[in-house]
Image (tube, rainbow, N blue to C red; front, side, top):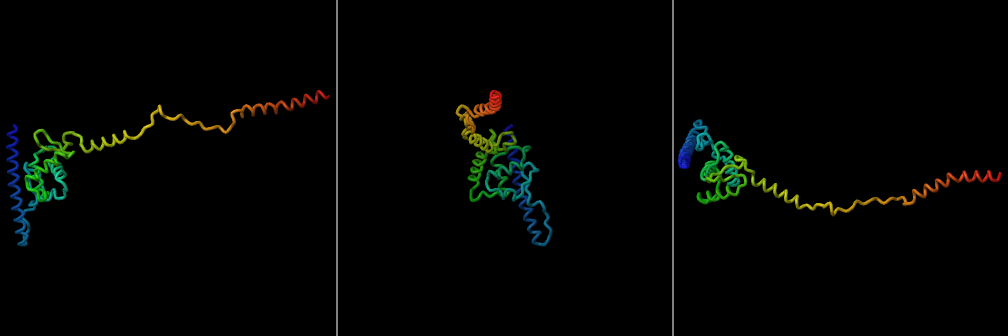
Length: 207
């Protein structure tokens, strides 16, 4: 089964190469027509059909991407989950067709750098067969999000917490009333109530 899959991928890439050459010829024909003041005969000259027949990659599809990993993710997203994972070589060829600039790197070095970037990318998953796909396709958590969540959790754990055993007892507000004030007040009140009665008794005695 693996041999058949590899053979199909080889055929797929061969078809893509022929389609790329056809697109180049179409662009040349459009330039000739424009130079002669004629309408361009091929409106799809800037579209290249990728292996598989229906996936179209513009000649400037990945020009805006700043890094190999982000360009590779853009290509994988374009492929979609239905097409599934693919090889690093296929990703490299798609990025080149889509206008991604690997700078002055020669092809072997550019492919090697791309493989390293894919392996380090937290949003990309490497299958056991060596193919690469997006983690979200397989329900695998994004490593970058996991690391951020872990960092937040560790930071929260580092915050000092007050243990109930070490907590200071609640401070009671000091009363402005002397401790014996209530008792003293009650005594004085009772004395005032008794005073008239004592005076009345004294007047009866004098009488």
